[in-house]
Image (tube, rainbow over all chains, first blue to last red; front, side, top):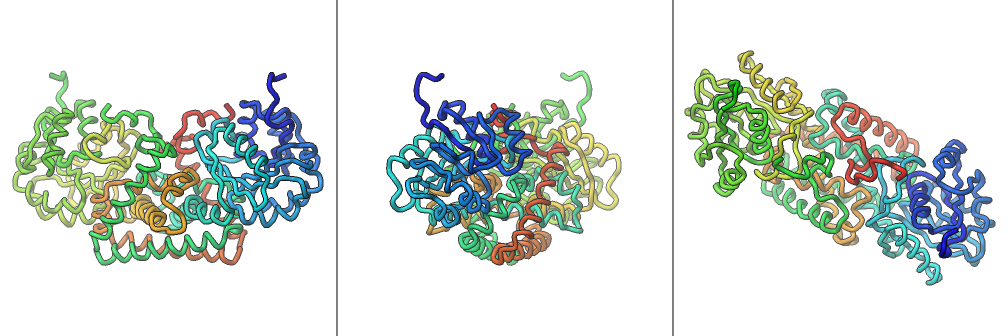
Length: 313
Length: 313
């Protein structure tokens, strides 16, 4: 038994994909829970989580998994949150914190809040971390280290519960910000949803060409294309749900993107080299800022090739 | 002195940025030249190349640099190729091979060929390799290893010269393909030019938002946006020239991309989850193929974080 009392007696992880399994590793490593209970819809995935030893107890029924849990984390596609909340709502313990890791927040609030009983602290959240891989094997302890977790507390959220959830994410390695759900959805529309949609789209466009073969696209992909394929290899269910759940903000960002692209296309058509040069210059600074903020590696090619870390050798 | 005769007595590198300096390293490492002569327009860059010891001789005047050279490689923005060819043309040695590393080929053929004297073998080329960095400090020996170099020989190209240039790129670590210049430009429009243009565009769109601050874009960029910033940090002069030089093929690919994006946007607006799921599923396979072809690292997040290479730890 640990010398000190863990932060939570019992944590229930509903969903055990990349985020859920990374949380399981981090909770275990940091000793944040007396007991980890895992539940997920697919019996195959639950079995795999058990093989990997990600938790202490494995429950097919989420309603049983959340019983007596002090912290419940939903790490499932946002489109599934409503139904799961409806199922677990009556079984949540008074005083428990219910949070989630979904990529959209207004839809989660809309779908989950009606099912949360009085006395349960529902604080939506979103860790800004991930890889293109999914499933219980994809998780790793350091996923959240140095990344941001955004919490979107609702009016009347208990400050003590918010503080405890903040301490939880901090213990997992995250830096924590709070904002309102609508602002979260606008921010994520530009930094995450639009990039994924654009990446999916360009890979689809390349896949459809008649004049350039798929094997040519693959062979010569190191010239730029491959950078897009990472995002376009993300989980399809998760991203379908994001597109449906954050429609308004995504359509707004897509409109701006297409407008800007039309202007850029016009500069190309009419040979306006100065306009092209100006755009291509100002975008350079942003990468430098991201590296300085510690959100990107400071090595060419994303550090793909360790030998490039030392140019000239 | 080396025991065996080098492939070329004298190689002249015109332009000493990422590609030129990487060639200098590879030539030196493989002993492919008796002498490396370097010339570039900026006296500051030429001085830096000398400090780095990238060559044996450093000439401000490209016409002097190419004198008696057996191989001349132009690694300069494609928009500068015509003027440089005009300057060096009369000074090229009979029997010399003249090639380039430009990202577009039809424009280089159009601009350079008229200045190439009888008896000089002009074989345009393009190594499909690079990082987002530029300048003489950015080069490294292994840049071309495992990557493709495309040669676009013209009608009547001397087979022996083509064979020798192929052997040169092979010695630098490349695999070599040949195709005609127009097809090269269509292929590169989709695998390289469109990805760069899209990346520049989305970074510009994010930079212009009023509702989401620049610091928010930077903080939360790990959720997708940062993947685009690498391409958008590429050399502005090079990319302006590419856009102007490969206009027709780029406009064709942009047209298709925008058409596909409009359809995708419509699916989002009307909540067509099946269409979204189908697209998001088929794009997954392409990344797997690129990894299997050895053109991408087999680690989540581009291998940015070495600890992710072993999930579960």
